Image (cartoon, rainbow, N blue to C red; front, side):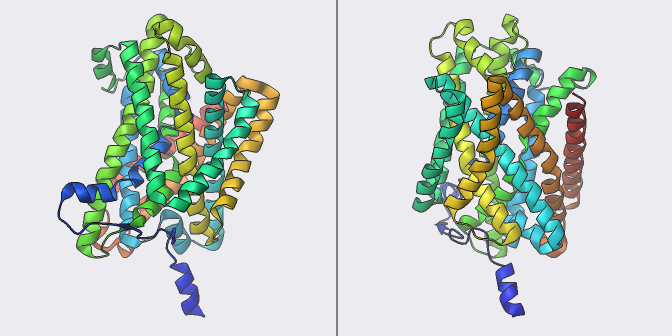
Length: 439
Protein backbone atom coordinates (compact mmCIF):
# COMPACT_ATOMS: atom_id res chain seq x y z
CA UNK A 1 0.00 0.00 0.00
CA UNK A 2 2.81 2.44 0.91
CA UNK A 3 4.51 1.67 -2.42
CA UNK A 4 1.32 2.53 -4.29
CA UNK A 5 0.94 5.80 -2.38
CA UNK A 6 4.55 6.70 -3.10
CA UNK A 7 4.02 5.96 -6.81
CA UNK A 8 0.99 8.27 -6.84
CA UNK A 9 3.00 10.91 -5.01
CA UNK A 10 5.72 10.82 -7.64
CA UNK A 11 3.31 11.02 -10.58
CA UNK A 12 4.74 13.58 -13.03
CA UNK A 13 3.20 16.88 -14.02
CA UNK A 14 1.11 16.76 -17.21
CA UNK A 15 1.76 13.01 -17.70
CA UNK A 16 0.00 13.05 -21.09
CA UNK A 17 2.78 15.23 -22.52
CA UNK A 18 5.71 14.32 -20.27
CA UNK A 19 8.85 13.89 -22.43
CA UNK A 20 6.73 13.88 -25.60
CA UNK A 21 8.79 16.42 -27.55
CA UNK A 22 11.97 14.70 -28.82
CA UNK A 23 15.41 16.27 -28.61
CA UNK A 24 17.68 15.50 -31.59
CA UNK A 25 20.90 13.58 -30.91
CA UNK A 26 22.87 15.67 -33.39
CA UNK A 27 25.31 18.21 -31.95
CA UNK A 28 23.80 21.04 -34.03
CA UNK A 29 23.13 24.01 -31.76
CA UNK A 30 20.16 25.46 -33.68
CA UNK A 31 18.42 22.10 -33.96
CA UNK A 32 18.52 21.57 -30.22
CA UNK A 33 17.58 25.16 -29.49
CA UNK A 34 14.49 24.80 -31.70
CA UNK A 35 13.52 21.59 -29.90
CA UNK A 36 13.74 23.27 -26.48
CA UNK A 37 12.11 26.53 -27.64
CA UNK A 38 8.52 27.13 -26.54
CA UNK A 39 8.04 27.04 -22.74
CA UNK A 40 9.76 30.40 -22.32
CA UNK A 41 7.29 32.04 -24.70
CA UNK A 42 4.32 30.51 -22.86
CA UNK A 43 5.68 32.12 -19.71
CA UNK A 44 6.55 35.46 -21.36
CA UNK A 45 2.85 35.96 -22.17
CA UNK A 46 2.18 36.65 -18.48
CA UNK A 47 4.62 39.55 -18.58
CA UNK A 48 2.70 41.39 -21.29
CA UNK A 49 -0.94 40.65 -20.42
CA UNK A 50 -3.66 43.36 -20.32
CA UNK A 51 -3.09 43.81 -16.59
CA UNK A 52 0.30 45.40 -17.32
CA UNK A 53 -0.96 47.85 -19.93
CA UNK A 54 -2.49 50.39 -17.53
CA UNK A 55 0.70 50.85 -15.51
CA UNK A 56 2.82 51.21 -18.65
CA UNK A 57 0.37 53.70 -20.18
CA UNK A 58 0.25 55.75 -16.97
CA UNK A 59 4.04 55.68 -16.59
CA UNK A 60 4.66 56.94 -20.12
CA UNK A 61 1.96 59.61 -20.25
CA UNK A 62 2.84 61.08 -16.86
CA UNK A 63 6.62 60.69 -16.58
CA UNK A 64 7.82 60.37 -20.17
CA UNK A 65 10.60 57.73 -20.53
CA UNK A 66 11.84 57.89 -16.90
CA UNK A 67 10.30 54.60 -15.76
CA UNK A 68 11.79 52.50 -18.57
CA UNK A 69 14.51 51.53 -16.08
CA UNK A 70 11.82 50.01 -13.84
CA UNK A 71 10.49 47.94 -16.74
CA UNK A 72 14.03 46.69 -17.38
CA UNK A 73 14.71 45.86 -13.71
CA UNK A 74 11.39 44.00 -13.48
CA UNK A 75 12.37 41.93 -16.49
CA UNK A 76 15.79 41.10 -15.05
CA UNK A 77 14.14 39.83 -11.88
CA UNK A 78 11.76 37.77 -14.00
CA UNK A 79 14.68 36.19 -15.90
CA UNK A 80 16.28 35.19 -12.59
CA UNK A 81 13.12 33.65 -11.14
CA UNK A 82 12.21 31.79 -14.32
CA UNK A 83 15.74 30.34 -14.47
CA UNK A 84 15.17 28.91 -10.97
CA UNK A 85 11.90 27.36 -12.21
CA UNK A 86 13.76 25.73 -15.10
CA UNK A 87 16.36 24.30 -12.75
CA UNK A 88 13.75 22.93 -10.34
CA UNK A 89 11.72 21.25 -13.08
CA UNK A 90 14.67 19.76 -14.96
CA UNK A 91 16.64 18.47 -11.95
CA UNK A 92 13.86 17.20 -9.67
CA UNK A 93 11.29 16.23 -12.30
CA UNK A 94 8.70 18.01 -10.17
CA UNK A 95 6.92 21.26 -10.84
CA UNK A 96 6.73 23.93 -8.13
CA UNK A 97 3.24 22.87 -7.01
CA UNK A 98 4.32 19.23 -6.65
CA UNK A 99 7.48 20.27 -4.82
CA UNK A 100 5.34 22.21 -2.33
CA UNK A 101 3.05 19.19 -1.85
CA UNK A 102 6.09 16.95 -1.29
CA UNK A 103 7.65 19.28 1.28
CA UNK A 104 4.79 20.84 3.23
CA UNK A 105 1.95 19.52 5.36
CA UNK A 106 -1.49 18.96 3.88
CA UNK A 107 -3.01 22.12 5.45
CA UNK A 108 -0.14 24.28 4.15
CA UNK A 109 -0.43 22.76 0.66
CA UNK A 110 -4.19 23.38 0.65
CA UNK A 111 -3.65 26.99 1.67
CA UNK A 112 -1.04 27.54 -1.06
CA UNK A 113 -3.35 25.89 -3.61
CA UNK A 114 -6.32 28.04 -2.57
CA UNK A 115 -4.54 31.39 -2.81
CA UNK A 116 -2.91 30.33 -6.09
CA UNK A 117 -6.32 29.50 -7.57
CA UNK A 118 -7.53 32.95 -6.53
CA UNK A 119 -4.50 34.50 -8.23
CA UNK A 120 -5.11 32.53 -11.45
CA UNK A 121 -8.77 33.59 -11.41
CA UNK A 122 -7.66 37.22 -10.91
CA UNK A 123 -5.25 36.93 -13.81
CA UNK A 124 -7.99 35.41 -15.97
CA UNK A 125 -10.22 38.28 -14.93
CA UNK A 126 -7.73 40.80 -16.35
CA UNK A 127 -7.61 38.84 -19.59
CA UNK A 128 -11.41 38.67 -19.83
CA UNK A 129 -11.69 42.43 -19.37
CA UNK A 130 -8.79 43.17 -21.72
CA UNK A 131 -10.27 41.02 -24.48
CA UNK A 132 -13.74 42.52 -23.96
CA UNK A 133 -12.34 46.07 -24.18
CA UNK A 134 -10.51 45.12 -27.40
CA UNK A 135 -13.68 43.67 -28.94
CA UNK A 136 -15.55 46.82 -27.97
CA UNK A 137 -12.91 49.07 -29.53
CA UNK A 138 -12.50 47.03 -32.71
CA UNK A 139 -16.08 45.97 -33.47
CA UNK A 140 -18.28 48.10 -31.22
CA UNK A 141 -19.43 45.04 -29.27
CA UNK A 142 -20.84 46.17 -25.88
CA UNK A 143 -18.52 45.37 -22.98
CA UNK A 144 -21.06 43.06 -21.34
CA UNK A 145 -21.42 40.97 -24.51
CA UNK A 146 -17.65 41.04 -25.01
CA UNK A 147 -17.10 39.59 -21.55
CA UNK A 148 -19.52 36.76 -22.36
CA UNK A 149 -17.92 36.11 -25.78
CA UNK A 150 -14.51 35.56 -24.20
CA UNK A 151 -15.86 32.30 -22.76
CA UNK A 152 -15.92 30.85 -26.28
CA UNK A 153 -12.14 30.66 -26.50
CA UNK A 154 -12.41 27.52 -24.38
CA UNK A 155 -13.16 25.64 -27.61
CA UNK A 156 -9.98 26.90 -29.29
CA UNK A 157 -8.00 25.81 -26.25
CA UNK A 158 -9.53 22.32 -26.27
CA UNK A 159 -8.83 21.90 -29.99
CA UNK A 160 -5.19 22.88 -29.58
CA UNK A 161 -4.70 20.61 -26.56
CA UNK A 162 -5.96 17.67 -28.60
CA UNK A 163 -3.49 18.43 -31.39
CA UNK A 164 -0.52 18.70 -29.03
CA UNK A 165 1.37 21.30 -27.01
CA UNK A 166 3.59 22.25 -29.94
CA UNK A 167 0.50 23.77 -31.58
CA UNK A 168 -0.24 25.80 -28.45
CA UNK A 169 3.37 27.01 -28.37
CA UNK A 170 3.21 27.92 -32.08
CA UNK A 171 -0.01 29.93 -31.61
CA UNK A 172 1.40 31.73 -28.57
CA UNK A 173 4.62 32.65 -30.39
CA UNK A 174 2.61 33.85 -33.40
CA UNK A 175 0.44 36.10 -31.22
CA UNK A 176 3.52 37.48 -29.44
CA UNK A 177 4.95 38.24 -32.87
CA UNK A 178 1.71 40.02 -33.84
CA UNK A 179 1.84 42.14 -30.67
CA UNK A 180 5.49 42.96 -31.37
CA UNK A 181 4.75 44.01 -34.97
CA UNK A 182 1.83 46.17 -33.81
CA UNK A 183 3.94 48.07 -31.29
CA UNK A 184 6.87 48.26 -33.68
CA UNK A 185 4.53 50.12 -36.05
CA UNK A 186 3.23 52.31 -33.23
CA UNK A 187 6.81 53.34 -32.35
CA UNK A 188 7.41 54.28 -36.00
CA UNK A 189 4.20 56.35 -36.00
CA UNK A 190 5.05 58.22 -32.77
CA UNK A 191 8.65 59.20 -33.65
CA UNK A 192 10.00 58.90 -30.08
CA UNK A 193 13.21 60.51 -28.83
CA UNK A 194 15.87 57.81 -28.94
CA UNK A 195 18.11 59.88 -26.67
CA UNK A 196 15.23 60.10 -24.20
CA UNK A 197 14.70 56.33 -24.44
CA UNK A 198 18.38 55.65 -23.75
CA UNK A 199 18.29 57.94 -20.70
CA UNK A 200 15.11 56.26 -19.52
CA UNK A 201 16.87 52.92 -19.17
CA UNK A 202 19.28 54.50 -16.66
CA UNK A 203 17.74 54.38 -13.12
CA UNK A 204 17.03 57.86 -11.78
CA UNK A 205 16.99 58.92 -8.08
CA UNK A 206 13.90 60.92 -9.00
CA UNK A 207 11.92 57.65 -9.02
CA UNK A 208 12.43 57.24 -5.27
CA UNK A 209 12.16 60.95 -4.43
CA UNK A 210 8.81 61.47 -6.21
CA UNK A 211 6.03 59.69 -4.29
CA UNK A 212 3.62 59.43 -7.22
CA UNK A 213 6.35 58.19 -9.54
CA UNK A 214 7.43 55.61 -6.93
CA UNK A 215 3.82 54.41 -6.68
CA UNK A 216 3.60 53.77 -10.43
CA UNK A 217 7.08 52.19 -10.41
CA UNK A 218 6.05 49.74 -7.70
CA UNK A 219 2.86 49.06 -9.66
CA UNK A 220 5.01 48.04 -12.65
CA UNK A 221 7.22 45.84 -10.48
CA UNK A 222 4.28 44.33 -8.63
CA UNK A 223 2.32 43.47 -11.75
CA UNK A 224 5.20 42.13 -13.82
CA UNK A 225 6.16 38.82 -12.16
CA UNK A 226 3.07 36.60 -12.29
CA UNK A 227 2.89 33.84 -9.63
CA UNK A 228 1.28 31.26 -11.92
CA UNK A 229 4.19 31.60 -14.37
CA UNK A 230 6.50 30.05 -11.79
CA UNK A 231 4.33 26.94 -11.57
CA UNK A 232 3.82 26.84 -15.34
CA UNK A 233 7.50 27.03 -16.33
CA UNK A 234 8.66 24.34 -13.91
CA UNK A 235 6.15 21.94 -15.48
CA UNK A 236 6.48 22.85 -19.17
CA UNK A 237 10.25 22.23 -19.31
CA UNK A 238 9.45 18.58 -18.55
CA UNK A 239 7.64 18.16 -21.88
CA UNK A 240 11.08 17.80 -23.53
CA UNK A 241 12.55 14.31 -23.82
CA UNK A 242 16.06 15.14 -22.62
CA UNK A 243 18.42 12.61 -21.05
CA UNK A 244 17.95 12.37 -17.27
CA UNK A 245 21.71 12.28 -16.76
CA UNK A 246 24.06 14.93 -15.37
CA UNK A 247 25.10 16.06 -18.87
CA UNK A 248 21.56 15.79 -20.21
CA UNK A 249 20.19 17.99 -17.42
CA UNK A 250 22.99 20.55 -17.86
CA UNK A 251 22.18 20.75 -21.55
CA UNK A 252 18.43 21.07 -20.87
CA UNK A 253 19.01 23.87 -18.35
CA UNK A 254 21.25 25.71 -20.80
CA UNK A 255 18.86 25.59 -23.75
CA UNK A 256 15.75 26.27 -21.65
CA UNK A 257 17.47 29.33 -20.20
CA UNK A 258 18.27 30.58 -23.70
CA UNK A 259 14.62 30.05 -24.67
CA UNK A 260 13.47 31.90 -21.53
CA UNK A 261 15.92 34.78 -22.04
CA UNK A 262 14.89 35.32 -25.67
CA UNK A 263 11.18 35.16 -24.80
CA UNK A 264 11.46 37.54 -21.85
CA UNK A 265 13.50 39.92 -23.99
CA UNK A 266 10.46 40.05 -26.30
CA UNK A 267 8.33 40.79 -23.23
CA UNK A 268 10.73 43.59 -22.27
CA UNK A 269 10.45 45.06 -25.77
CA UNK A 270 6.64 45.00 -25.72
CA UNK A 271 6.28 46.48 -22.22
CA UNK A 272 8.87 49.12 -23.03
CA UNK A 273 7.11 49.79 -26.35
CA UNK A 274 3.78 50.44 -24.60
CA UNK A 275 5.51 52.94 -22.31
CA UNK A 276 7.45 54.55 -25.19
CA UNK A 277 4.33 54.93 -27.34
CA UNK A 278 2.48 56.43 -24.38
CA UNK A 279 5.33 58.87 -23.67
CA UNK A 280 5.79 59.93 -27.29
CA UNK A 281 2.09 60.19 -28.13
CA UNK A 282 0.64 61.56 -24.89
CA UNK A 283 3.31 63.08 -22.62
CA UNK A 284 4.85 65.23 -25.35
CA UNK A 285 1.41 66.53 -26.38
CA UNK A 286 0.38 67.47 -22.83
CA UNK A 287 -1.92 64.49 -22.17
CA UNK A 288 -0.37 63.51 -18.84
CA UNK A 289 -3.27 61.60 -17.29
CA UNK A 290 -3.81 58.80 -19.83
CA UNK A 291 -4.02 55.57 -17.82
CA UNK A 292 -7.12 53.93 -19.27
CA UNK A 293 -6.84 51.67 -22.30
CA UNK A 294 -9.96 53.21 -23.86
CA UNK A 295 -8.53 56.72 -23.55
CA UNK A 296 -5.29 55.66 -25.24
CA UNK A 297 -7.27 54.11 -28.10
CA UNK A 298 -9.39 57.24 -28.63
CA UNK A 299 -6.39 59.58 -28.65
CA UNK A 300 -3.83 57.70 -30.75
CA UNK A 301 -5.16 58.28 -34.26
CA UNK A 302 -6.07 62.00 -33.77
CA UNK A 303 -2.76 62.82 -32.09
CA UNK A 304 -0.55 60.91 -34.51
CA UNK A 305 -2.54 61.71 -37.65
CA UNK A 306 -2.05 58.13 -38.81
CA UNK A 307 -5.15 56.25 -39.90
CA UNK A 308 -5.33 52.87 -38.22
CA UNK A 309 -3.00 53.64 -35.28
CA UNK A 310 -5.83 53.06 -32.80
CA UNK A 311 -6.93 49.89 -34.57
CA UNK A 312 -3.42 48.44 -34.42
CA UNK A 313 -3.32 49.26 -30.69
CA UNK A 314 -6.64 47.44 -30.08
CA UNK A 315 -5.56 44.45 -32.19
CA UNK A 316 -2.45 44.08 -30.03
CA UNK A 317 -4.66 44.22 -26.93
CA UNK A 318 -6.93 41.46 -28.27
CA UNK A 319 -3.91 39.26 -29.09
CA UNK A 320 -2.52 39.90 -25.61
CA UNK A 321 -5.76 38.93 -23.88
CA UNK A 322 -6.30 35.77 -25.91
CA UNK A 323 -2.68 34.70 -25.50
CA UNK A 324 -2.89 35.06 -21.75
CA UNK A 325 -5.99 32.89 -21.52
CA UNK A 326 -4.12 29.96 -23.09
CA UNK A 327 -1.29 30.04 -20.57
CA UNK A 328 -3.64 30.73 -17.66
CA UNK A 329 -5.53 27.52 -18.44
CA UNK A 330 -2.35 25.45 -18.48
CA UNK A 331 -1.19 27.02 -15.22
CA UNK A 332 -4.55 26.24 -13.60
CA UNK A 333 -4.32 22.59 -14.63
CA UNK A 334 -0.75 22.33 -13.29
CA UNK A 335 -1.60 23.98 -9.96
CA UNK A 336 -4.67 21.83 -9.31
CA UNK A 337 -2.96 18.58 -10.24
CA UNK A 338 0.27 19.52 -8.47
CA UNK A 339 -1.13 20.59 -5.12
CA UNK A 340 -4.13 18.24 -4.90
CA UNK A 341 -3.12 15.36 -7.19
CA UNK A 342 -6.57 15.69 -8.75
CA UNK A 343 -6.97 15.09 -12.47
CA UNK A 344 -9.65 17.21 -14.10
CA UNK A 345 -10.54 17.08 -17.77
CA UNK A 346 -9.26 20.17 -19.63
CA UNK A 347 -12.74 21.34 -20.64
CA UNK A 348 -13.95 21.14 -17.03
CA UNK A 349 -10.86 22.96 -15.74
CA UNK A 350 -11.26 25.67 -18.37
CA UNK A 351 -14.95 26.22 -17.70
CA UNK A 352 -14.34 26.39 -13.95
CA UNK A 353 -11.59 29.01 -14.28
CA UNK A 354 -13.53 30.98 -16.87
CA UNK A 355 -16.70 30.99 -14.76
CA UNK A 356 -14.83 32.33 -11.72
CA UNK A 357 -13.42 35.15 -13.86
CA UNK A 358 -16.49 35.96 -15.94
CA UNK A 359 -19.11 36.14 -13.17
CA UNK A 360 -17.58 39.15 -11.33
CA UNK A 361 -16.69 40.77 -14.68
CA UNK A 362 -20.31 40.48 -15.85
CA UNK A 363 -21.66 41.87 -12.58
CA UNK A 364 -19.31 44.86 -12.46
CA UNK A 365 -19.66 45.60 -16.19
CA UNK A 366 -23.45 45.53 -15.94
CA UNK A 367 -23.50 47.83 -12.90
CA UNK A 368 -20.63 50.25 -13.45
CA UNK A 369 -19.70 50.05 -17.14
CA UNK A 370 -16.24 51.11 -18.34
CA UNK A 371 -15.16 52.77 -15.09
CA UNK A 372 -15.98 49.60 -13.19
CA UNK A 373 -13.95 47.40 -15.50
CA UNK A 374 -10.94 49.67 -15.09
CA UNK A 375 -11.16 49.32 -11.30
CA UNK A 376 -11.57 45.57 -11.64
CA UNK A 377 -8.36 45.47 -13.71
CA UNK A 378 -6.50 47.19 -10.89
CA UNK A 379 -8.04 44.85 -8.29
CA UNK A 380 -6.90 41.80 -10.26
CA UNK A 381 -3.31 43.05 -10.14
CA UNK A 382 -3.56 43.67 -6.39
CA UNK A 383 -4.69 40.08 -5.84
CA UNK A 384 -1.78 38.82 -7.95
CA UNK A 385 0.65 40.91 -5.92
CA UNK A 386 -0.69 39.48 -2.66
CA UNK A 387 -0.05 35.91 -3.80
CA UNK A 388 3.36 36.35 -5.42
CA UNK A 389 5.62 35.85 -2.41
CA UNK A 390 3.88 32.57 -1.56
CA UNK A 391 5.30 31.21 -4.82
CA UNK A 392 8.67 33.01 -4.87
CA UNK A 393 9.88 32.02 -1.38
CA UNK A 394 9.30 28.24 -1.81
CA UNK A 395 10.99 28.41 -5.23
CA UNK A 396 14.13 30.01 -3.78
CA UNK A 397 14.10 27.60 -0.82
CA UNK A 398 13.83 24.47 -2.97
CA UNK A 399 16.52 25.46 -5.46
CA UNK A 400 18.84 26.36 -2.57
CA UNK A 401 18.33 22.93 -0.90
CA UNK A 402 21.17 20.51 -1.67
CA UNK A 403 19.00 17.51 -0.71
CA UNK A 404 16.64 18.34 -3.58
CA UNK A 405 19.05 19.74 -6.12
CA UNK A 406 22.31 17.84 -5.49
CA UNK A 407 25.17 19.37 -7.45
CA UNK A 408 22.71 21.71 -9.20
CA UNK A 409 21.96 23.57 -5.95
CA UNK A 410 22.21 27.35 -6.16
CA UNK A 411 25.77 28.54 -5.48
CA UNK A 412 26.29 31.03 -2.65
CA UNK A 413 26.17 34.12 -4.90
CA UNK A 414 22.92 32.96 -6.54
CA UNK A 415 21.37 32.16 -3.17
CA UNK A 416 22.18 35.67 -1.95
CA UNK A 417 20.84 37.26 -5.13
CA UNK A 418 17.67 35.12 -5.15
CA UNK A 419 16.84 35.85 -1.52
CA UNK A 420 17.48 39.55 -2.09
CA UNK A 421 15.05 39.59 -5.03
CA UNK A 422 12.46 37.57 -3.07
CA UNK A 423 12.57 39.94 -0.10
CA UNK A 424 12.65 42.99 -2.40
CA UNK A 425 9.50 41.82 -4.22
CA UNK A 426 7.74 41.05 -0.91
CA UNK A 427 8.53 44.48 0.55
CA UNK A 428 7.50 46.33 -2.61
CA UNK A 429 4.23 44.44 -2.89
CA UNK A 430 3.47 45.02 0.79
CA UNK A 431 4.08 48.74 0.32
CA UNK A 432 1.94 48.81 -2.82
CA UNK A 433 -0.94 47.05 -1.08
CA UNK A 434 -0.70 49.44 1.86
CA UNK A 435 -0.93 52.44 -0.45
CA UNK A 436 -3.89 50.94 -2.34
CA UNK A 437 -5.84 50.18 0.81
CA UNK A 438 -5.14 53.72 2.00
CA UNK A 439 -6.80 54.92 -1.21
